[in-house]
Length: 222
Ligand code: 5RP
Image 1 (tube, rainbow, N blue to C red):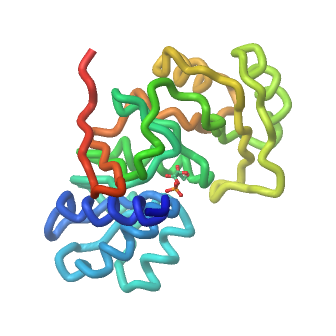
Image 2: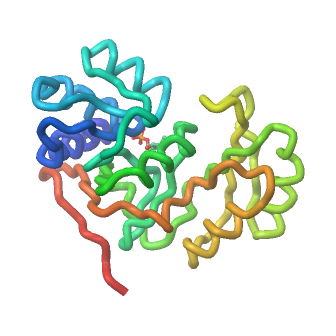
């Protein structure tokens, strides 16, 4: 089974978390694109969606799903999104698609965060996937120097501008043993918009697509 077929399995399994008559939070990426197909088949059962990117908005509107501005919405019972890595506590690295800031906002505004991924995304320690950091353009070099001090090797994602008009530094060579501490340390640097560590608000449920089907992982307790 291909990685994409495993992503599809996870997306299909997420259908059971869709809340009838509600506005659903929708993430970004190739796994979520499968989920948008699933959601389109159920669109009569939901009121609509809030979207974490221009790309997901376009896809949902093409499929007839009503997309609301987050400012119009009071209650999001569930947010469904992919990840680049998850540890066993469901701390995540996200932002491979560059949508990390809007993703983190919607994750924070939602009651439940269901992460969908293929099984290769589950790791013991975060950091093999380069950690994305969204940065205000004028702060790029300054933040890169600060990220080096934290032990990383930042690489500017060239020819890429986020939906918010900012740039991304992808930080290589990190072994993230204290994810909450790392999230807080990077977040507090002036010029950082968002770091792609989702640990202060991790996922609540992880659905992993695998050749034998989809399995649900709950966060390990310390
Ligand atoms: C986008 C993200 C994605 O969820 C993450 O990159 C996973 O993408 P994919 O489902 O394509 O593997 O964080 O900003």
